[in-house]
View (cartoon, rainbow, N blue to C red):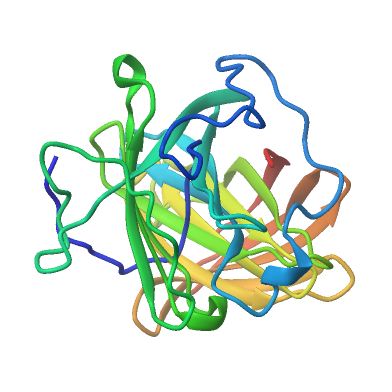
Length: 276
């Protein structure tokens, strides 16, 4: 699979490889079984001000499917790996492969990338499935030095996606939520507005992505500040063109609230459940 690095939206994904490029004993390969949600940050304090560390995010594809993703970028070691969580189970592990620096494409034949990370420069890499018979994701990831501006471009089951990602820190855990919204009627028609919604939330920041099912449309990632587990996020049709306003509250493992459609009488509710 040869794709250019198209870092246009924030997000993330998931895998498992050690310094030698192979599976490590510390990684649980118990695929297709339920997993335990982390109770505390997994990021090393040594990585808080570096591009190294833990990145968590969510993705929604054009086929109305969602996944939660985690990347460990030399978090306290030289290992770089990721994991994908889908439908309540560990769906897959991703391997970091070597990229041609001149083209930004994967090298063929595929070779696992075991190089140590240069923390003084922008970092980018490509992941694909550890299990060829179940491969469903192709992940491109980039981040600036210091861990700023992480970007994710995911191809999930061969479909275009929306993506959102945040860097976790040792004292600020990142939580991921997937869910749905429903409510008011679309442009005075008889069709109710329904769709997917997903969040990446930290104590200070939240990012939302939305995809309408009733009137097929992606709404690009939007961010907002978080205060006391509450935040209000405007969601846009395009640059500067607000479509929704979401009023959100995180309570335990649920992120829920209400939405209002701009320039319309349409209102509704959403509920998303924690997936990481």
